[in-house]
Image (spheres, helix red, strand yellow):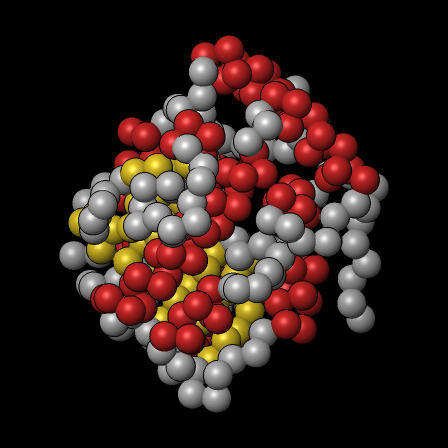
Amino acid sequence: MTPEPDISGLNTSRRFNQWLGGKDHYSAERESTATIVSIMPNIVAAAREARSAVLRTVRHLVAEHGIRQVLDIGAGRPLSPNVHEVAQEIAPDARIVYADNDPLVGVQHRGLMLSTPQGVTEFVDGDLLAIDELLADEQLRAVIDFSRPVAVVLGSILHLVDDDQRAYDAVRALVAALAPGSYLVVVHGTFDTLPEEVRVKAQELIDGGAHGVYRARSRDEVARFVDGLEPIEPGLVSSVEWRPAPETVTSVADAMCWVVVARVP
């Protein structure tokens, strides 16, 4: 039986879906968005640029680095184009797994995933903060061969973990399970680029607790996620500077997002 959505309170995944132009949101998400926009008018454009950056990293890794396996952790609600569509357009034999801990996200992905005949696209229930369980999942391992290079996408998920130690520990355990030649993609929200007065108001909003968890990390804090790895060009930069799309119009300040893709040596 398909689980019924709980629309009694805010769901940050649905709110992000709203920002990306999806229709899977309710009054709680719309009200939260209105409050956030009153402080950060650029938030919707920033979210869309972050999503574009995720797809650009996948496209680059498949086209230029020969990656044929992608694990997208914290995938969120599906919107087209999605990771498997971008990857399999370039390499029809690409194997993609989405993981998320929201059961409704799983229902939506399974209903919309259309893999190429040559490749595989799958969804598994999993949580970054239970990374050992996720990596041991039989369904995941039936698709992804961890003895070969894989790109792991952490797009807009790490800033939803406010416990720094748990976040760093999870990523460290994840990287330890990857074969040499694998890649880690980190797309992470930041307040570094905001004016001080806006940064203070934004943090006060988060600290109030009514709008969900959001751990905006500094550039140095994001860099810690790829300690010991080999960042590829252009390194750790704003989302609008990571091989930008021609249509990019968001400024570095408005994007509020760091992006880095790093190779496992």
